[in-house]
Length: 108
Image (cartoon, rainbow, N blue to C red; front, side, top):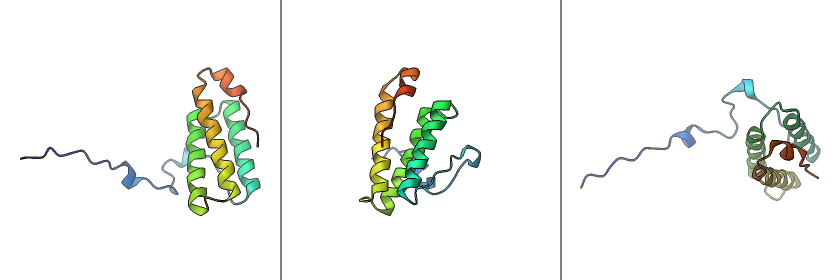
């Protein structure tokens, strides 16, 4: 009974929530206070609407911010706001027309 070897998923072994694999593509985020989170969300929306970054890149950045805030304190207002914005991005993903997608507005 020879067992077929399975491919080991090494992605998560090398994945670190706090490291930066590609510093050239870095979008700076701040999440120390609630105002920092709001400013970061405004900045990400501005970068997306200007066309500097695509929707999927903004979603990745917000996902990282949300996961970091969840580790800090999942009952915090910063985490709740970040989660709310992440859910907004999930809904925006469903809109396939790029022009309509850019017209969607996140309300705090």
